[in-house]
Length: 279
Image (cartoon, rainbow, N blue to C red; front, side):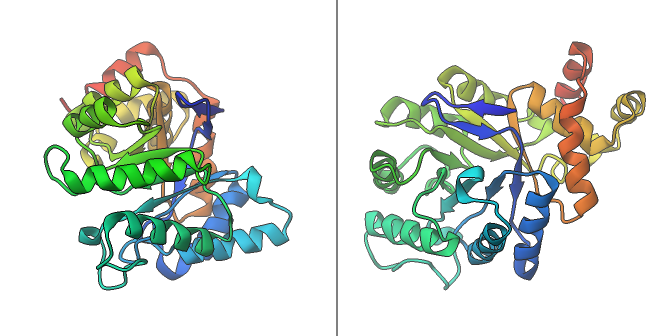
């Protein structure tokens, strides 16, 4: 299965996230691909990611015959306020230069000459979009127009910011990646904007941000009735409401189990119940 954005580029319906993997990144990416994942998410941000180790995994996979164009690679430009001292660009340069340097660094880390998706890791402003956001987005749009990335997107964005971006951008985001809280209707407002504009919503922290939901008796009853795991139910729910879920599991068995979520379907009643369970 795949999801297709408004620019007719498709993404596999499940993505493996590489945040907080550190030295284990290389092995875990190889395990994820061996389990069946074909979409990998990372970022050029050494606090939380090790993009170069994702690249090491890709080299190792290439030696096993898994070629670049069979994988979907997504990485991010992280502004200075999301970096430590190890910025992958000249932190004193203008923002357009920072984006270009970070992008070129990502291509080198990942041993590729193009990306499938390039994402702004988060706006500079807490509310609305400021000059810095527009300058960076213009630089990201330039990379898309050059053909160096097939999609562009934004992460950690509010509904108001996303509306502004859709109204003023030359190229709207094709993907939006947010932490997804059940208590906010699984980011309902942002998801609705995505649906209206043909953008793909990627949800992360579906499990870790929703501990109370996972232990809810109704969720457990649905899982038991389907003969499925709790995580599988949440991931399947995400897919059925039009979301692309990310998983960052470090357990090879869980990687395979997560991918099995596509093998069953939730009823309309079950989806409604999960969608409103924390409201």
